[in-house]
Image (tube, rainbow, N blue to C red; front, top):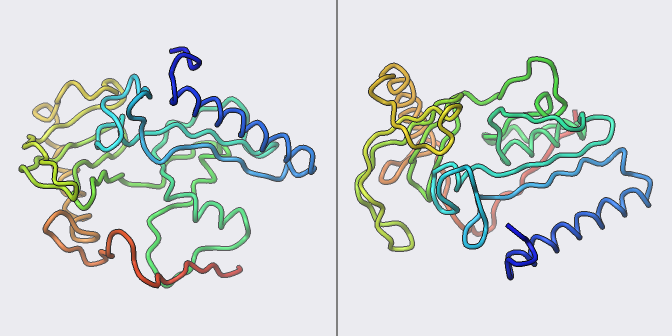
Length: 236
């Protein structure tokens, strides 16, 4: 795809590219480039004029094209250049990781879903994802569970979302993301043990933070909260 022929989307990409370059330029001019972590990422997959190839679907879905995003990190002398990490992590991990790098830790008076992923970022030998599983929610509905290479799409009945659009009825599906990144081949029948393990993880998460129509023990209100309690950090 030629960015210059992609209308508003292409304009946005060029502006982001230019502004990122300006940030790097200023860091170098200020002499703090070698002591600054730069993270470039997105909150969801592309929609409209963007492309998520080779992933399936787009923003607003729990297919990989809606949830998996590019993430580029730069930290001179601390993150090796040109390396690719294929372990599961998320933006939730930024808080505890940045706290660790700043010599502090998140407050202990609440549950923090993120994990310290500095071993992954710094390419530490043998570093693995600190997450047993990753849970894909659309609004308040748990739709998928991933553990390692396996991703389970949970069976769902038709329901109305907060936008009023009906979710289609879908059967249980299991995909091997290492060999089937586009999520085309349902292998649930061949791996009943994996299905059982991921269903158990889904049930555990429902009890923790809930599901559509199911209130979890640690569930917090979704959306805007009046006078939210600030997140505090304590020095080590």
